[in-house]
Length: 307
Image 1: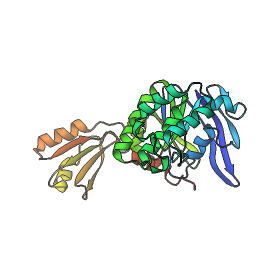
Image 2: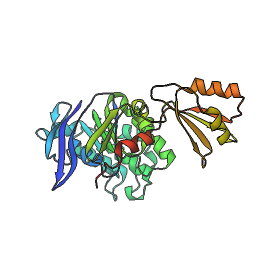
Image 3: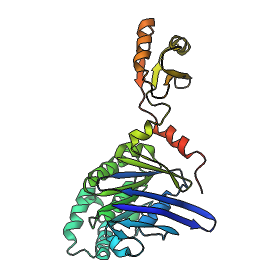
Image 4: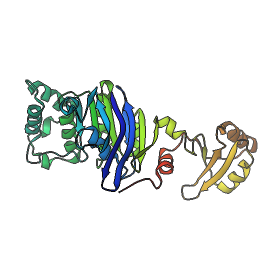
């Protein structure tokens, strides 16, 4: 388990992380979200023992990161933002170097296993500087999992990757999460749905939300809303006025979509579709919204980021 209590980091008068507390249990993939400058990377660096907190405590697998740093770091695999490595080294040399630092005995078999898992065979002897972003990220993840840690701390693991590379890295994280604690710092909201079982949103150095992705989406004004497309949106809006449980109807003319919003706690899909049937209204599509995480994120974090 990761246990964080009242974690604070100050730089002079700037409070980058402000009394943050949370725990993460085995089997969880925690998405650590926030706008740029919110304190995500600073928190990740403190968990990994890279930065010393001003106040508060961090325990990883029962070890205090400050008083027992070696014991804690043996449990952690850390991928910093940007996946830095020695560019003149090849992946083969780099992983051998990491294995020595980690004190692995007879590391050859473990290196082969990790290389195969990450699909690094064809670039093993290329200088890391010559690799694509996707392969550089794979090398970074390889060094993080080489010692088979119980905890993975991944800072922006898919930032800058193309859609195919993002899919590959996310699939890898999902595979690793089966028997590990995984904490992922990201500002990419689609990442939360792709790999996370839980999300913490931080803004202005403070935790402002802690819930599952579905629970966060349920806070959206779009939760259980109904979006429709039709040739005449104005006529459609007029026909839907007065449907029970509806709080508002909005037209997005650029997207050519009409959205019917429910009163909090009301289900309006049935009444809306019934009105369409009664009036014989011709629509080209009807969609029940599950909520929009980006809208919840903006609402929660608006004005909360710090540089």
